[in-house]
Length: 70
Ligand SMILES: [Zn+2]
Image 1 (tube, protein in one colour):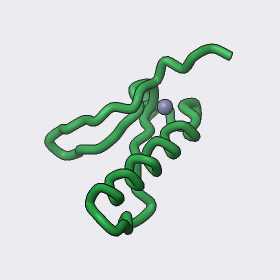
Image 2: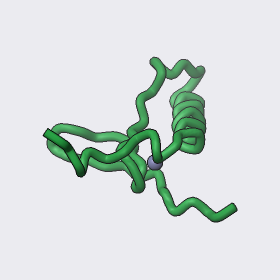
Image 3: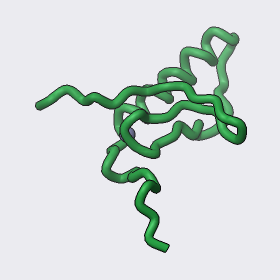
């Protein structure tokens, strides 16, 4: 069991901003509005969801579009 080198990072580009994986094309898409009783709780729930999605995604299933056979 080797440690994964992938990381969750925040990127901001002209037409996109969000959480992405450093090793593939995965991006975090929140399943829906986060409901919490406070900003703090919403933030916690958001981060929990984000981390869970990141941890469970498989890089091989999100290949980057570097090679695009046209
Ligand atoms: Zn990945």
